[in-house]
Length: 247
Image 1 (cartoon, rainbow, N blue to C red):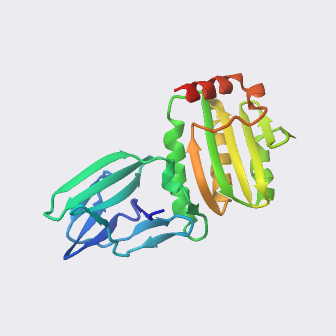
Image 2 (tube, rainbow, N blue to C red; image 1 turned 180 degrees about the vertical axis):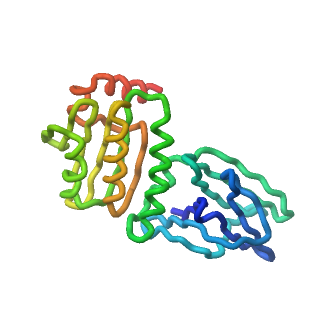
């Protein structure tokens, strides 16, 4: 899995080295990227399953078919974007811009002191998701985490809990979390909330992600499987999942 380069207000530029020449990519005050000859500053580098670093390292693009290829992410004022950039050896630049998804944090390793950068990225993704018009909020994640910690993270948001054959389910009016502990250090966690419980949804989701040591995957608004019991408390959730599967 290739490293991901992320630009933010505090980490606004990256230098790129190509054969025979170099350039810089800088995020401006409006969150857009610009090309320059040189820059002073740092960028965030997510190395999946290895580390998250604040660095001023000169990066090298992929090379193929006579062109250079690289991907830059920007996280700015509640928005996250992905830029796929192609530069021909003749200097022609092409770029494709799209919203960055949850794959931005796939394989992210949570450790100090760089956890603050991951928190900023996760909060941006969650805040953007919370403004989407949906009655039911869903966050699903596969995590390396001390499974014993999850109870302390989720319980403050729920008034009851029970165990099924596969899941520990926590629930209260408008909120539910289902935890499947695969090993003492691997768990699948799904957090579901009505829009009126958005604060609990965000806090529980953010806490469980940041208390993990590796985020293997994370999705917002989707889940591959409905944990047992969720449809009992929230019939609308079953209809939502059925619609997503048929789409």
